[in-house]
Length: 236
Image 1 (cartoon, rainbow, N blue to C red):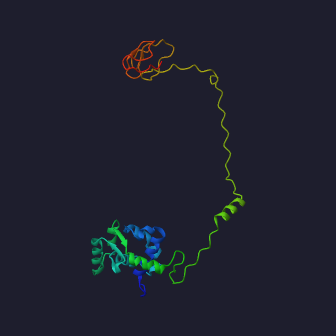
Image 2 (image 1 turned 120 degrees about the horizontal axis):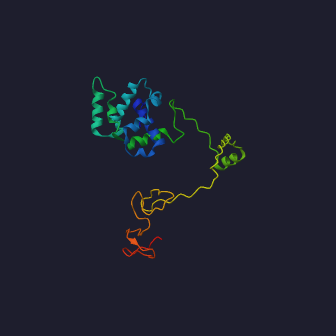
Image 3 (image 1 turned 30 degrees about the vertical axis):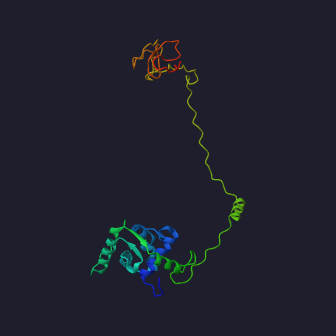
């Protein structure tokens, strides 16, 4: 930045550099999208500082910045040529820059360095009137914060009592011992008929009296400990 009186373009660049430094300092040396640039310097937040009265005035100075005026930004030549032509036309389309929201821009290293020198360190930069910003109050040391927290009684949140459970109606069969259900078929898992001597599964037809190998399904003799077909140990 130079010592000449600043206009709205200079002020916009200063505000942009300050916002980038505070929020995403890596963008001081890296490219980022136009949409992110607009989020750093939204109209409602900067209109007073820039001295613009309408949204069109804001769009005009943003277009000047994106078009590469004064070399504050480096960007795609197509975008900068297009926006430069719009600014030079008798009736420019001030919303043309919105067609390039995904385009990437890079801050000029030299201009960013000068802007940071003009802004000063965080917390000490000048406000809109040129006066130093008020110094924030000093933070209490962590040890003092912990001591204060230990001396303050923190009220416990109120937890309403849980409603008592509604008693269940008496069921004469509730306390009666339950008969163990017959296990399901070991082949298909389906329930087997109760109270009957079941030799074959009514669902898959497998012979339930025959032992079979769990690996190859070969039939096993009752006394065999290993399968004669695949050598796997029998499970029973």
